[in-house]
Length: 420
Image (cartoon, rainbow, N blue to C red; front, side, top):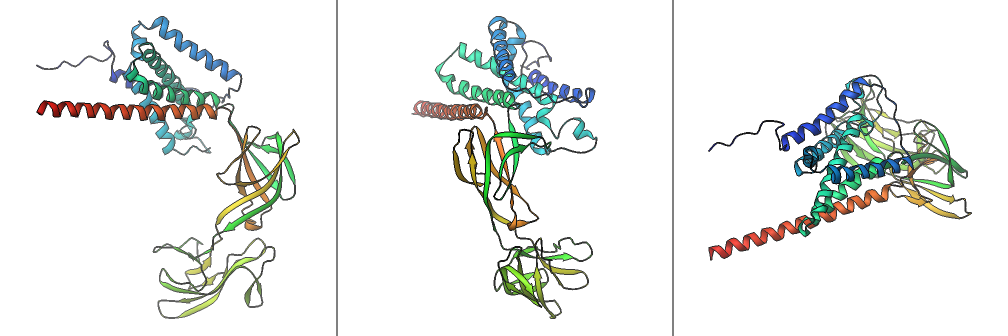
């Protein structure tokens, strides 16, 4: 007997219609970017975002309980619609990972479709609203016909709904600012990406800024272009005392190395003065067994760099040391008169008055002698609700995995008993 294929858009709708609707909304969003170019970005902040969010929740509940017998609502409350919506949403998220989300100059297909800023695009807005609508209707249907075995399904889908919902609502309330701190000075103003300054409900005094650096590296560059020569791997080797190595076709020996030094006469001496730079005395043996020797240094803001010319085409030099770790010792003041001493580090935040403070950067031209420390201040009042959503997704997924394992074990036991 031949199975007849159901014509497209004939009731009941299934997966094909679901994917067409979901990706159709994405396409409509891209078309809107073409037809409404340079549309202003509107940030919805508290309390307006909360009011709109509650109205949306009320609308979903009313649609389900008043119109659930209508064909389109029955379809949107089903599994095919939810799968299509989530797949389209995931496709946009993957596209965000592929296309760098950074500002771009000029007009091209990427900027026109806002592929470099998808979170503020029409496509992302439409698919977000559609996912929230569909998941909301599916969750309400499962809750109305609640069965214990569906607990994991409800928990994971509710977690996904809460995560998407709160990320969208909280986008307008998210603040990401920077503050420039100078040694022995107190700062209470921060600025955003557009250079606009804000007075903060806290002040930070920079007591000390410290950088721990890796040793510099040996590298060969082309004399004509200054580009790194990468004929073989490794193309750079970290300098150590008494180092002997082969760098491309040259044998290199480091006779002396100072992590902090200054030049006097025809050589370098170890010193720890302000602006001192790393230096090394190297001996290089060429392929023709000729030996070259001399001092090399990466220099600093007040010392010139020095390189060793190997031949007409190439020179051996020392790279600028890379930071291993940098941190700021600060005192943080709050309006209530309290103060706390804290060390700020990269990826290690300190929270005060709803703000998270991170070590971000420094004056790279000055290197370890920088007296400027740049910190980032982040305020995201909706973050806790995002974490709740993610936690619910994890609990629901674990439960469904455990429930599935029990069902498989039960099915295996039944098969074995029938065989016996």
